[in-house]
Image 1 (cartoon, rainbow, N blue to C red):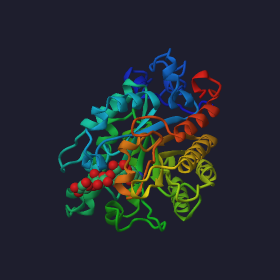
Image 2: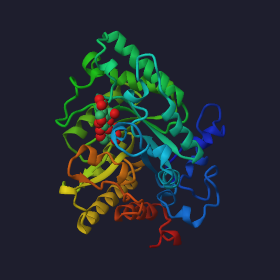
Image 3: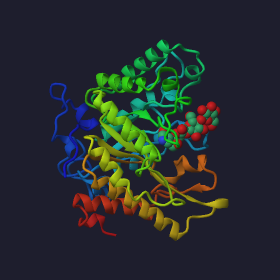
Length: 392
Ligand code: G3I
C-alpha cells in the first residue's frame, strides 16, 4: 500500500517541489531503498536489502532518533552522529525517517534569547537529504527542556506569546517543505490525564488557547508539514488518550490545523503490552487524522548489571513486533520511529536505574531478536518477506 505522499528531503533538495506543492507519487512514495526510489540509489546491493528500510518498502516510514544533546552530553563517549562511523552508516542505511532526539528542542536551539543555534539540526537535515530520508521535527511546545532564560525570565504573557510565535516561525520556517511531521505540542497532559497547567509555562501563562495558536503558526510557517500532538502512555485507550481524543475533536471543530496524533511507545517488559494500540490509533484515524508511533523502545529490568535473559529478549521482540504490526494495520499510520537503535546510546539506563537493553541492537551493533521481529513484520506488510536477503 502506498501511504506516503510527500517528498524525501533528497527530492526536495533536488528541486522537485512543483509550485510549492509537494508532489505525490514521486520519490517519497517509495521509501526503503526500493527499486522505484530515485535519489536513494536504484540498484542497492544485497547488503543494503538486508535492512529495516528495505523490509519496510513503501509500507511505512521506518525511523530512528538521531543521538545528540540531552543525556548524551553527560556520557563519556564521543558524539555518535559525528564520531561513530558505524552508527552513521547504519543511520543512513537502516532507516527512511530521522527524528532529532534533542537537537530541535528549545534548550538546544536557544542558548539565549537572541541566538538560534541551528548547526546540529541543519546537519540532521543535510544527512537526511543525502540519504533520501524524511525528518520528524521534535518539538515546539513542551514543559520540558526549556532554557532557563525562558523559564526564569519573568516574561509577561504578551512577551511569551511573541516568543513562541517567533520561535515557531523561525524554526518551522527554516525547514519548511523539508519536514514530514512536526511534534507541535508534546506531553501537554500529565499521567493523571490533567492538562499540565502548572508545569507547562505556555499553558500556565497563556491558557490552552496557546496550543491552538502553536498549530496555526506552524501551519502558516510550513503548510506541507503534518502537525502532531505527541505523548507517552497514550498507547492504549486510557484516560490520557481519552483526554487527547476529546481535546482534538474540539480543536478540529474550531478549525485548528491538527493533522495527527502520535504515541511515543516507551514500553517496558515489566508491564503488559497495550493490546488495544491499534484500536486506539484507529479511533484517531477515524477523526481524519494521521497517526504515528514516534519513540518506540522496550526496556527491561536488569538489576545489578544483569545480562538480558533469552526470555526477556523474546518478550522484548514480541513487543516490538506487536507495535510494528499495529502501526502497519492502521490506515494513515505512516511512520514508525525507534528512539535510538543501539543500546550504547539509549536514554533508558541513564534515566531508569537497573533498566536497559531497550533498543534493537547490542552495543557492538549485532542484531537482537527485536530487530528481526521488526524487520519480519515490516517485510510481511510490504510483500518483501520472500526476498532472499530477508531469509535467516
Ligand atoms: O538540564 C540539565 C542540566 O541542567 C544538567 O546540568 C545536566 C546534567 O547531566 O542535565 C540536563 O538535563 C538533561 C536533559 O536531557 C536536558 O539536556 C538530562 O540529564 C537528560 O537525561 C535529558 O535527556 C533527554 C530527555 O529527553 C529529556 O527529557 C534525552 O536525551 C532524550 O532522549 C529524551 O527524549 C524524550 C523525548 O524528547 C520526549 N519523550 C520522552 C523521551 C525520553 O525521555
